[in-house]
Image: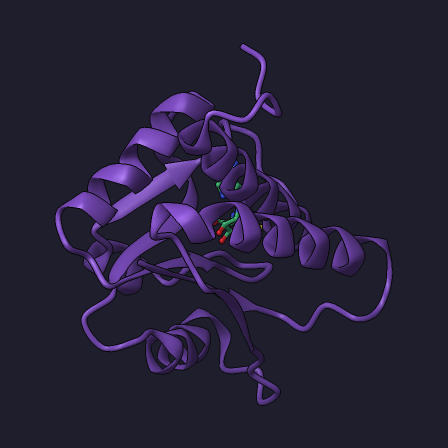
Length: 156
Ligand SMILES: C[S@@+](CC[C@H](N)C(=O)[O-])C[C@H]1O[C@@H](n2cnc3c(N)ncnc32)[C@H](O)[C@@H]1O
């Protein structure tokens, strides 16, 4: 099952990008034997100031056809890391080819796109900067793959 990050904003070279690249690389390597991957990250940017609706149009275009859409949203479901790993395994085991994780920009994800999502995942009630959410998601994908692989990275 291919994993896609579809995200608003371009991450320039720096510590956040280094972390995202490293965790996605690890997630891909650990996930390979589990039927998870490849892992890709598509960045979209609306330079015309069209707001959430314009960003949603760009995000929709970045979603692979038929992908399960999981939006990152502070109002979504809060899960433990093992539960998140279990959810990913469930999507894989029910024959999903693609899962796309969407992260919004400064204003958040357009409510219409949120309503279209199959799943909303929260990293807590606090609002985090979208670039940090990208790092956190990349790390949780690596953690999920490690949990499913039974490696000792995750310690409860
Ligand atoms: C700066 S936040 C935008 C917050 C905005 N007030 C909203 O209503 O969504 C940018 C993006 O980061 C993600 N995000 C921020 N905090 C989050 C959290 N606690 N859990 C999950 N995603 C979060 C969401 O995808 C959000 O669209």
